[in-house]
Image 1 (cartoon, one colour):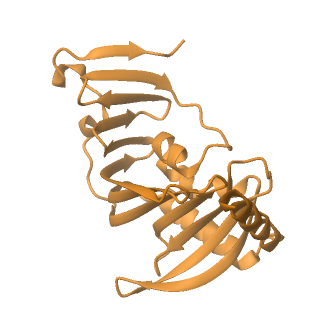
Image 2 (cartoon, helix red, strand yellow):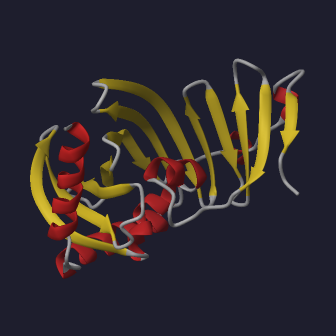
Image 3 (tube, helix red, strand yellow):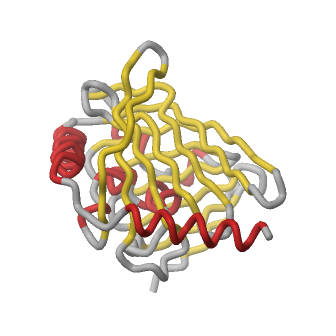
Length: 219
């Protein structure tokens, strides 16, 4: 019964998103342009993974340092460094780092996009999505504007994504609704822009991790 209910929910959502709302596009475009114009972004965030069928959830907290196409993400005992083309994923418990090329896809879910290019959360609506303005919600004394988008390709594993934008058009939260009943929510609990970030903070330096095992997956 749960699977049938989820299928009905997904089909209902698909029906609601039969348009591209100009007002929603204006807000999405404005937020994307603003984020791209920042010299740097530093943020604290919470990630929540929910499995509705199993009634389980997991929460992870992390930090983000971003400067242009380069960034560093610390979350769940993993430190990810990126220079815009390559990614170093360092596992603190095993003292090993895996190096790989960034190969982003339009089919990637938001959590994958965040780990390969945080700014892509602001822009991936441009390719193959419909969007509408949602309700407003009061959070922490601020009125957040919700925008909902859905993929035109119904074969994608998710059927809806919701954005919460602050009054100043910065992203506060994004939530992805998967067809299998799982949910992913990313909340930026602290968000600062144009702070000074030293380049050394964004580089993986093997000298800082004595004895690290390096696994290079690049061709």
